Image (cartoon, rainbow, N blue to C red; front, side, top):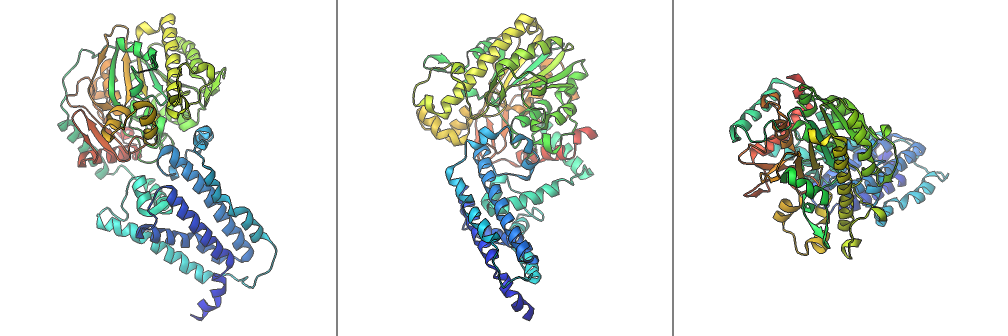
Length: 601
């Protein structure tokens, strides 16, 4: 006790106390910016404990080093808070450890993310110049001793406080040491600091998952149960339609289905896609199922029929995984797979993930010419123009995956490329900007289809067009109601009318048909395999269904930008709470990726 009293003046160091107070205030406003109730017991206790942990090292330093540590902690914490808020506004989920592994993406997303910066965010920085002067002004203090005993007490008590609520919750729900919530649920339960602490905990935990006999049995049991639950016809008129033909898949950035067939001021928004419907199988109830990897998740799902990781981009976390992927399935039929995307090769870590998916060649911006720049990079028109000679030179038959870029948020379109004549308030809204960008990309796709026809490629090709994910999210609902729908949009209308992305499967000899079966991106591989003549037994671990033969289609949409909670949507109902099997579906997908299951079969 005497030793504690002797070290008490060092604990009352003004630099330590001021940092505690300032950081506490910043964390409070950080939480309020997420619309959290920061007064809950779990948030207060967890946050207080983590503050003790973060500040405890200061007690082990002399005054000069202590000031440097405290200022660095405050400065780095402030930058992190601002980054977290920007990320949340854009992706509707807090910054994760996995995002640090995706830092190569942040440079290209600059215009998109920083458009969401609020002037009030700069208030988080207001204290730093003053503290820099105070912390480093050379005046003497009496408390120049370390206080290691107080540091140990703060560290131990902080860890206890930080863990007490998560551990108690895990015990209550029999979920092991700590219960695993979704990202936003964790944020609401334990506050932003608590979220990042638990996010780091689970990140470390996830790195050591092995394909044990128990995990293998869990996966095999799920597929056995899926087989029992799925009612499917033996065949369809479209089986083998594309056998021996080239397959060209176009992933369109931010393309939502609600624009297909629609007009504004007498102008078609997607006139070229509308024409394709005359010779396409059109799936209007086709849902995006991406999570933290956004566009790269779409590429993963469409090519593997697996849900992506619940956290982070699978391309970053597990780029070397091997799957029963579409490129590898087609390779057995003599196909060569290539990908074309006018972004940097390392964006979403594609340069590492693509070869393992089976793409033999990848034409990124480094292999294309930057002849016209719009938004994030090479314009879609120019990218498609350069794609034609690449496809002409490719070994036949080929599978080409082409990914557009221009219609990426924040939907900037130069005046001479704004083909729609819009009137206020639509013209001055984000919705109007989105429509202009989609109209431009539709124009580029039309030119590409003409190029395919003129080159002789189209007559012997299947062309697929689909949207990677939504471009207008829940945060845009109010504006959509005001300038587009002109009425309130219910939760069910949002999910049925605005959440889907289109899927078109085109061939010259096809008669246009709308397939009303509900499904999602996870169903693409079984569906296109059926068309391309790939035997079903070749992809036994596809989690999706063949939308041309399944009798009761549905889409399981994970929690993400499209909805606050995961939903299951079918023609007759929407379930806003998942049943046990659907919850297990997402867990099994996570387990398959983390254990590289398909590579070990």
